[in-house]
Length: 410
Image 1 (cartoon, rainbow, N blue to C red):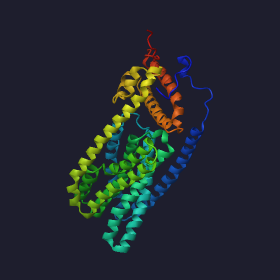
Image 2: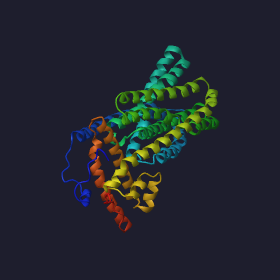
Image 3: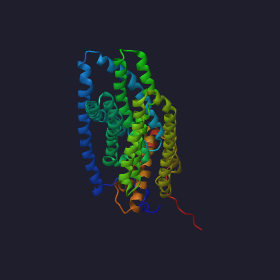
Image 4: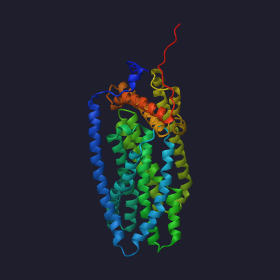
């Protein structure tokens, strides 16, 4: 409880929003960053869309060898699995799930901005390499040098945007991995459309080639891009959780780790498809190990939230039941069936956000730094009271009200 003032005044008043909130310098800076971030995002998304139009869509519309048909087949094969894969990170992120709009932003970035700019640069590098050293050299330099560096940069740019412009929605390592997974899945889905279209068209509509490509890219190794980009996400997550040199070493080190893993896979695929098959069992083991690490990190996030919400029960802002529900891996199910449905789930999100805001505030206080997270503690406490009243109305009966802990007399 150190670092937090005791509750003030009669407890019912804690639920009333302040009449005239004061905008601090930190709050103003956050709002400015959001406005700049919107401009940043819109500009690059527009550029990526134009590049996709020029590189892929117009050639398919004007081609005479069935390019449009091939792209359609590629889309049919690539997009449905994406809907399935997106559920996996959503299920894993049990505590304080990221807002749907933030996930949609990074997913779209991966499928539009990252694809467009990466496609342009990779095409130029491959063409220059072909002019210098021939077709094989151009293919190697494009796949093994340009693709890892360029693609991980453009995917990582979405993580930088979340980290810098929308810091309130970026709390640490788990959030970095979740955002990285979504941006990478968006990228991989559009990339797969191109690969499937080429497999269908270049081999004279031989279904066996297309099926083999789908099996390799869509079934056996669909988590390649998410694994690579998660390294960058971990780097930004460490920068969010720690201070000092981590602010720079985390993102830079994560980016180069992502590029290296990307290079290893592309190098094997460029040298020989048989080498990829030989590597596949080891690659699957790496992916499964990383999945276990993610689960452990998610559980750590749950413990952080719980530790920072314990004193909310003592102060009289939450009940023990609400604390257990918020920090349970199945809390959303409990809220759905026992605590008001959608309003209960909103309560859990607000409570988790309160715990993480306090966590960031404690770390900032130790470093004698200001943080906008401190300004959200009181409003979030007020929001919990408002949501609790909505839960009671939705259930048609009173719900347990929190009471401050009072020590017993001698």
